[in-house]
Length: 529
Image (cartoon, rainbow, N blue to C red; front, side, top):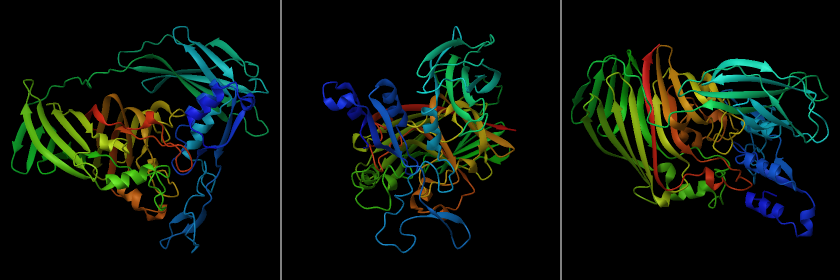
């Protein structure tokens, strides 16, 4: 029950003990409470590798909440303590893969992908040859249709359907996909996406029901240097500075830095104000149920307990002096700094970010985070920006469309996605961290007139919301939340994984944020639509 990965490996690798001659089934191993099921793919990798590990049961299927309405008519799911019942377990029975009305949690998509009946186990992009395994134990694959599509940098290119095939239970089959010869330009990425559907109605699903999917890199690569932008002809930059502020303007745009807060506080393009404030160092997230059940006592050994003892939620962000200079090419460089001070350290995290503003209006932001060893294993490491009301239209190239995290992203395919900021909200019964996206190449937000785009040479994580981490953390029910008109944009170098520690192992070491130095850069571009 809730064994760690290393315990399973030790069990499966020991052939001498009599118990090891029998298959192991975990009665519970992943607790689906709130934003959870982190590390599920790591367990499935072990199921695939060791025949003795037969699998296990996720606890559990459904959130046990009861529909109620707030005085203003807002619906919410009630739980322990909402009925005058004492003692109670608060939301501990809200621990399912679906909400009480059977709407799926994002974690269910991860489980569905890991448990799908077919899987692409190898791929040779030069020969377009795929090896597909039938993971079913008792029937062949004849009832499953396999379609494919090719995307280049997230844009659809071509598609097709593979001929019907009968792969015997537990067996693999190699086949060629008739891909056309499509050139891939430098800096572009190509992916072959496979979709598995039911070719006929079955006892449990309709025809064309999606059974699973795989994504295979076809070729191309991303630049790993600083973001490169084609220089557009532009006039020189004007710099004005007084005791309180620094203003930099060019043709069609204006930036304003606060000397007192050491941050960018004005970004205007095409007559629109884009920013209210930011980027500013951010190390806190609204705790998930796995971080610690925020209404309970006895959580001292959980991440939330450690973060509260360290003063992370109330860390004071101290500014460092602003420095400005010009380069020979006509760029203006602005160096800002923030230091997060909390109970365990007056310099728990230090951020030094340098803005290189180019005459054409593009802004390169180079960041250096220094995490004190006392502050290792932070909730997140990144910056927060507050965009002006109206920047509601969202698009991105990375993993989606549903939320995903470093230890729960196997099901989220890389592609181009779009929607609204409000659409990113995930209404977990107790409000908590949600809506994150990993492996992001770029994202953009617009208000119908002006668009602002963020891109990275490596990868970044982001979430866009009408709630701050503080708003979410103090709320106990969804009806407590009141959306802000501004868009809260979180750009993260890294966010801690989810784990399953509400009733199981904590987030794996590979998905935590270590102490030390972390470098990260991104590019900001604003344009009129």
